[in-house]
Image (tube, rainbow, N blue to C red; front, top):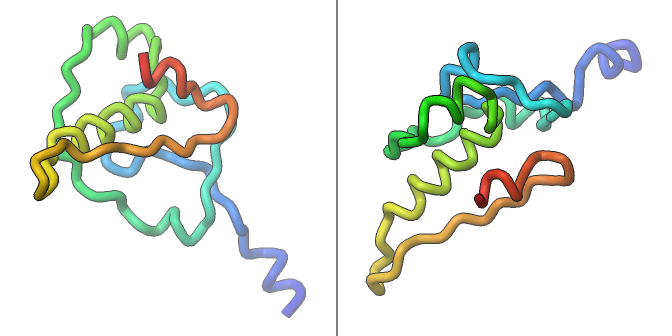
Length: 103
């Protein structure tokens, strides 16, 4: 059993699940997620990102940051039963570019 546990990874490299990340700039810091979460696709986004092309082409935002912006905008399109817009909580750790995403 010990050998089996050693061969199973607890964490895996994170890749945006619903974006064509091949054409995007990879995030500068290593980002991981639990191996279990790596098997689950995030919900299909409904928002189409509308940014200047150079923001993407010049790598001003990484694939991870663009994914966060896309899901935040998707959430903000939703209206709650009370009439308010839905919010988005960004729980990223240090070094992921929260300031760039918010800007």
